[in-house]
Image (cartoon, rainbow, N blue to C red; front, side):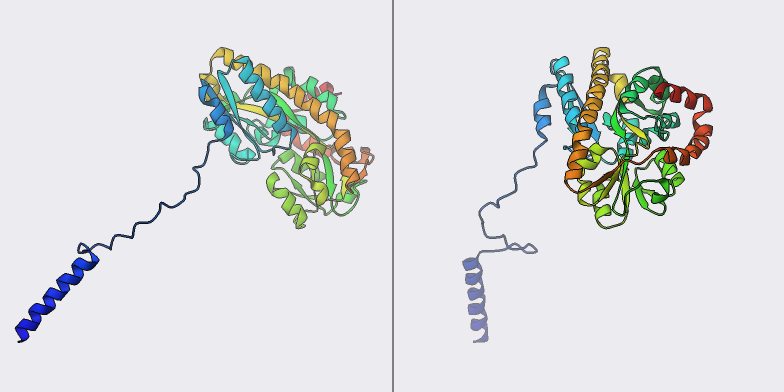
Length: 356
């Protein structure tokens, strides 16, 4: 009887297994068949890459300025001009707003040959060639029109001549401009007004030296982080050309702007020496000619727009002051003495004479 029951039980088990379908030992049951999951579209390459598919040479150009900045607008013109001059043989892809890293990181990538080109911060490039800091000396230029004759000639070439041995080459000095001070506390009318103010600077030794001489408390911070830092009160103020102040909307987080012209900075357009050495001579010629041509366009755009942008900042609530600069010049004479051992007295005097 028991044997008969066992046989019946076994038969029932086999029937159930065939009813639900068999699953191989040691494996999970196969999932029920479902409709294919809807997936996000595959990430597309930048539009420029699609445009560049027929180019023989594609160069990546990175920089920190956002797309609203004249630096990007002129870079677009430069890229288009190079393509036209080479009949589409050479295409320059643009990567603004630190898409490829900070200025420091991009400069390093250029020296290593992993980034083709960069419109970089003057102070960063001066860390590879300290003599470049000579054009940043306080109150060296009293008008932007005087910059071109110094940088586009013999002095500009002399300052940059040692960079190829360090992995990069300056094609031209693009514009950053004469710099001014903004803050959220008070109008800066005399050097004493800066005492104790926390001022953001770029990672630039000359700028730090200038603001220490003026009695401020300066510290570096990456530009893309600056708006938030100002809004949170991490810094009381900062210094930049009017173009950058306007493009970054610092009027929303800063109340005062003082037109000090305390120093000038360029934005050198650099190319990797490794990359440069592999380019045909005719391509090198076009890149160099275009770099110089659009450096002049960049300066012109910034100089022509500055008065209009300053008026707009004032209309948005910023209080503009134009202090007597003589006390500031006196207060920063020590910077010249401090940098004489780095730059050499002869170079300083040569640049001072050329800047007059």
